[in-house]
Amino acid sequence: MSQVSTGGKHEAGVVSTPLHAYPRRWFALAIIAAAQLMVVLDATVVNVALPHAKADLGISDANQQWVVTAYTLTFGGLLLLGGRIADYWGRKRTFVVGIIGFALASALGGAAWDDTSLFLARGLQGVFGALLAPASLALLSVLFVDAKERARAFGVYGAIAGGGAALGLVLGGVLTEYANWRWCLLVNIPVAVIAIALALPIVPESRAHGNTKYDIPGAVLATLGLSLLVYGFTKAGETDAQLRLKYGWDSPVTLGFIGVAVLLLALFVFVEARIRNPLLPLRILAHRTRGGAYLSSTLIGAGFIGAIFFVSLYFQLVLGYSPLKSGVHSLPVSVGVVVAAGIASGLLPRLGPKPIMAFGGVVAAIGMIMLTRIGIDTSYATHVLPAMLILGFGLGCTFVPLGNIALVGVDEHDAGAASAVVNASQQVGGSLGTALLNTVAITAATAYGRDHLPKSPDPKALDLLRAESMVHGYVTAFWWGSALLVVAAIVVIVFIKASKKDVPAEGASVHLG
Image (cartoon, rainbow, N blue to C red; front, side, top):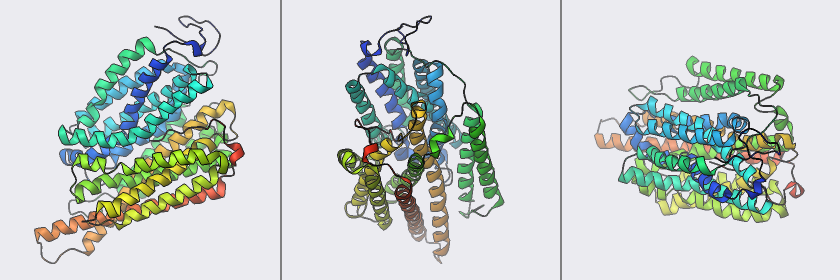
């Protein structure tokens, strides 16, 4: 088993080899890309399968968002810690353990017998994904030291990150329609087996030297605080057997969970400000432009991931689309992102990040507002398709500048943490947004159903009311999602001070989804 040291020292079992001369680095890239594809796919592959999993396992409307948030919350909350573990424990070792754990969690999810077991499996996928993703990036960084080769390698990795989400929608539709929703999770197992078998002899080991202490208290406080905040949002939308809200936003139970969550997150900030080796160095957030980038990333993740969660539900539960048709009809968002990313990359050196990102936030909000025109018999071509293309185009305009300004003015020592915060902030924002907007949708749908209850218990009238209530809830969520995107654009205008001079010549990348 070959190993590569990141320094020039000889250690037991470590060969000090010039990294650019490692002969099998391109084979290693293929293995790393395949493993990363699993992580990216699982952020979206279950969206299409959700209605079937929900019916099979008896998942309630209030709890359905945990299928998504259990994954994104643990993934985003532990991403920084996962990066530190990869650097100190060994990047190859962390990479392999991440793949093994991800496959086992996928097996648990595929065999889920109730909603709790599925949520647990999704959370474990996020935990091991938080090991796998930063280890993958770190391995690429040490394997490709030549600037041109590194640009090509990260281009491949970025294409996986960008295209994987779209592929997940289609793959989820195919597996759900022609096999079973459980295969959306089980499909990871053969991919993982092949990746492990190839990684052991081909991918070299490397690790950082020096200070190797972990901020375990920070990781526990951040993840637990965010989880309780999501749980508080979920409680606000929980309904009883008569589809009436059990708690609501002013309930002591809801406010209690949210209050404890805020207390834990405040304690996290207190600990990070005083610990010697913080998980999140607060100096990274203190810079005005970087702080604005992270806040806008959180808001974009909350608005986009939170609202798009309802598109697959709308396609299948209201319009009656098959899982495959639902996945294919969700692709225009990804098409818009790809087109805009290409345009934004060309304009970035000339205009700078601020105008492109602010424009993108506004355009994305317009696309989200256009989704509020949906109804129970809406035409896809005239109402949904244009909205999704515009939404994707706006998001693409924000993603490219975001990766550049996240590192403006950051010290080399903090570069890895600053880059990881962008990805973590979007995942955490998506988790909070999904939970919040799911509760908003349920509350709106419940109120609509109560206010429009027919005088006679005609089954057809009740079915129609149920569909109208769902659509009303989705529309309300889209309005809230558009508001979050507008706020993100305002944050960019107020806080981002980076100019075109601050944009790196080679550009930077942010891996989303």
